[in-house]
Image (spheres, rainbow, N blue to C red):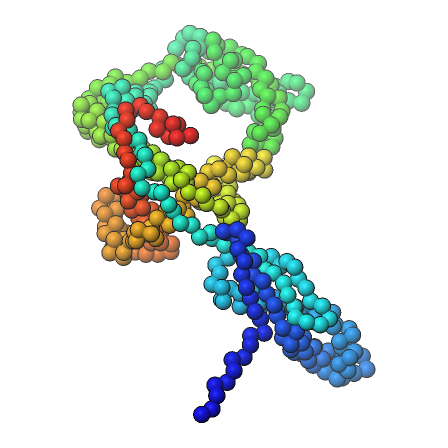
Length: 446
């Protein structure tokens, strides 16, 4: 009976160390014979393609080619082995790195194997514990008459008109004026008149100098205003500059609010009476408060879960989260026509770090709870959710399903459903205490 052939020893051996829960160091040893083989192959290829005066292509003596490009070939051979070793390390140790490997402790002498370390960050293995009985405060749902009145007052404000008056302006009045900036010689620049500008006296969006200047003015009056623009002003032409304007008052108009009656209610609500509008507003405010209370309860669960479990985060994970948040801020700036600002980015990076760490720790811990408790979402669950959303918003179900199944939308919906089910599970095991509607439940958690 013949003996089984002895398994060939791999030219690359790897072992893994874990200095941190989020870090792996792959320690690698590559045989000298592997290097010799890789180098010889590259040298042979170089000889074939080498061209030197006095020799036909591919006929340059090997020793001469090696003298000219040997150092480059040796470096290329080492790089090839490092890449090959990294692939072996990934497969053998089933690593899922978050970062590219960092080469450390490289050693390759005239004799013996090549040894080196490859250090990477990985998603930490987290096991959530002590997540039963989390104390949660649930605010009572209460909508006061004064809350409804505030909404009605805003509706009146949205339908306000301004009526010309023959008196000095007061806070809340609308002043129409022509603005003429000062030219280089100190005289008003008639070529740059801003005609018919409308400002509300005391308006929050006005610069303080204008609010002060337009209070107590009358039509026909002229007034000089000096405005100093802040260094952080979005316009490069105005940053830190002081500009004097000549203001010519055209008109003063007082605000008039419509009567709060069935006529106004029908106008803003598509035909409802005032009583019906009040009921509709109360229902909307109740739903808004229910959503806020639900979010507060989720936030309390998340904070307690993070507080009860120690999670060490990979630095790259936090940096990627902050970078993504800053990119989102830049997209908003673009939509609003605001320039990006390095100082603002730096401030956001520092202020946003605690939020990033809380969100990432919470994500890992919620994932651990899901895994331990077998919380899942099936394709049928997703399909039911698609139909539910379509009905709520009046979408055509098949077209909405097609939209969800395109791109990343379906994965995003499935993740949201998994997260919701995880929060619901934790809330079902929580110790929930009812508190008054005006309680500051999140402030108490700070």
